[in-house]
Length: 203
Image 1 (cartoon, rainbow, N blue to C red):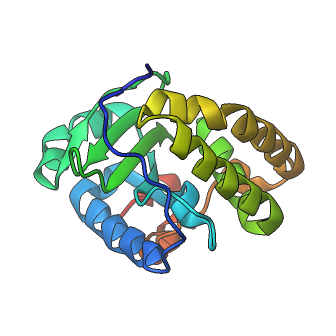
Image 2 (cartoon, rainbow, N blue to C red; image 1 turned 60 degrees about the horizontal axis):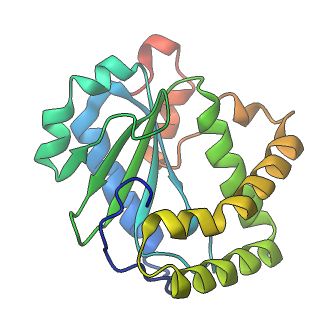
């Protein structure tokens, strides 16, 4: 069993064109809730890749000015439906879930400059740019979902080698790309703040 191995049904479904709009709405809510602590918010995971089959859960990557600033806002996060899970197995991360047993959102937060920001974005962008790889990934996820008996640990283990391989390729190919050091937010309202001096970011 892996982390959070309660037996929720693991369902991989066809891509839903509504997923980007669901991300946009949640991103605006997070910006209002977190204020200056939120530097950039990105849509990641399979729901961020057009055409890719996915579990219908919106994955969000939150870049924060400082982890302690985010920790101080846990009650605000709870007020909009998120449960704080701490690092949840990844040092330097703050992980949040929304929706309880009917999970709707996962949020992964890292401080500015953390390599995990680049890692997540490189993987997403590689799948967006290589639809044949995305199709292969979708087929793998469907197959693993059918055999994992709703054990999220087994589901993640079944994808792990594929994900790590594509992730390593994506990082190598994008290493010269400055966006790996300074990601641009997926949220239009936030993009203007990224061009401002550091003290102005996140407004």
